[in-house]
Image (cartoon, rainbow, N blue to C red; front, side, top):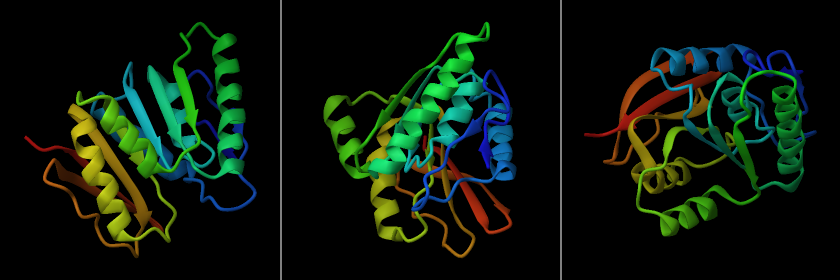
Length: 196
């Protein structure tokens, strides 16, 4: 079972796709959001959740006070699950006094989405980017995503890459500098921020 841990939609259950995704555990999500809270990167931020799967990471950010969230997922079944979960979370805001965030589910590949974003604007747009690709994605693919993404992250923002502990550290582009690495069981979290 996957659920929202805290915030306006706290304790709500989320659907997960029947196959093809690997939901982030509650323990790891709690660690992610403890870090973001300590960095003051929760309230009113813009969040990009790449390889979103069920949307659990981005929707947790929504529940905790993020202003806008984009969930990018190319697999049709997973994108449909993310849309259903988005409706569930937004319904919770209808029952609370908190202002509902803007949440968009984009059914596209990450590379296609980022290429379109790059064409649309040269201004950094994202405060927080969460990248949780399938474990079978190559390091070269992830390096390409990070290279394209780097100019889109605002100063003071953060990029999270979640991988298996058997994976090497991501290859960071010149525009991002690593700031933290944590391991939780089989999961490794790498954090980076825009380079000065």
